[in-house]
Image (cartoon, rainbow, N blue to C red; front, side, top):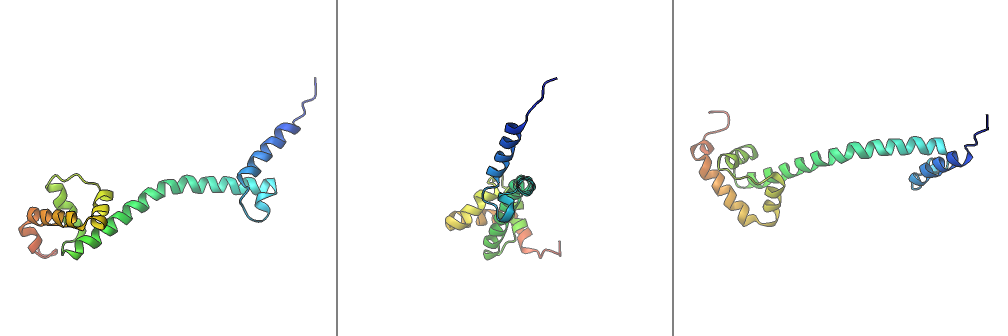
Length: 128
């Protein structure tokens, strides 16, 4: 049986991993084993955080909407409830952008929410 020489295959695999690790600090960009571990960990973090970014943005939008609503005397949860009752289908990203960049339009939505809620808004939260 003939002998199989893997020198080129191994060298190419190592070069590929070391290329991915080119910006890492210390021995993680020069030694293959350390670089391989660091690259695998970096890819795991990137995969996880691509999903986490979506959650982070949604919570940021909610915080911004809540701040804008409370400035007009209505809590976030009641505002969203009123928007769904009034069949306003703007998502939280759009509502957040309106609250920041177009306060007049957001004031119109606040007035619509207050009109939709009516007497529910007057009653304290715990006394229903």
